[in-house]
Image (cartoon, rainbow, N blue to C red; front, side, top):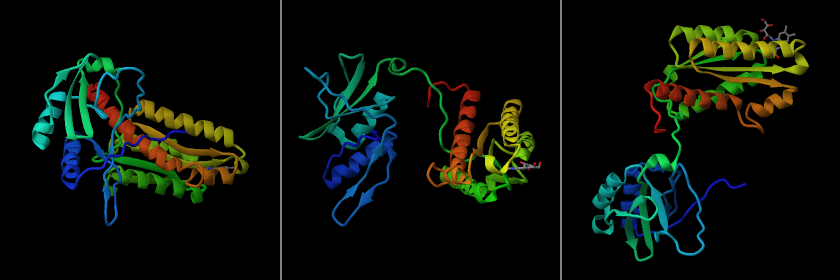
Length: 282
Ligand code: RBF
């Protein structure tokens, strides 16, 4: 039910600029801003947000708490942007350190970090959704092209918006879904792509060998991924009806081509991180 949490704070123009610059320097991601003739809004997106209710004495006074990885650098940046409004780093009673940034009489931000960051979260590695510099192969079947071309458009849209260049995307068309695994393997083995996105559409009503083809295609794509070590993602629709296929190609249930593409970006990034031995989640 809940999708997000937004804290809204109003500032003078000068403070708005100063605080925006600090939050950007700290690595906050810009959200989609807005403006009209009188006002403007600049959302900043944090990877994790929470609403904390307290009964009894609050352990800290600030209105907004921002957890950072490197508190000393955050403190230096806050002093650079706000001079004396940024206070000294102090120990808290909850195994962490904090410094205040008093923006005005009504608003105090606390920047903080756990003394032992490993305690605040288990170690985790995950891929990023930035595709710049990555090379992709897309294998798309012509059978049911009315659907598969929509999957392809979804995949291309995702790759472009994630930062991939068209020059780094190689599209390979095959007659039907049954041919997808072989083409996917050739692409993966060519060394010319970092990931392979497979797009097809099998409709039970029209395919007497539906089960066999579906099983074979899925197995073949998985086998190619495992044996070549190149990430493959699965955008082959297996549907009961044409209506179901249309829903999954951009109507009611999103576009499975888009999803296969974003998964390819994430898995390529993850593979890079795991190969480099990163395990700090960053
Ligand atoms: N390919 C698809 O991608 N989707 C289908 O729904 C599909 N239905 C087929 C139904 C029959 C009866 C046959 C013989 C093939 C079908 N194919 C389909 C094509 C198959 O994937 C492959 O391209 C051809 O069988 C040639 O090897």
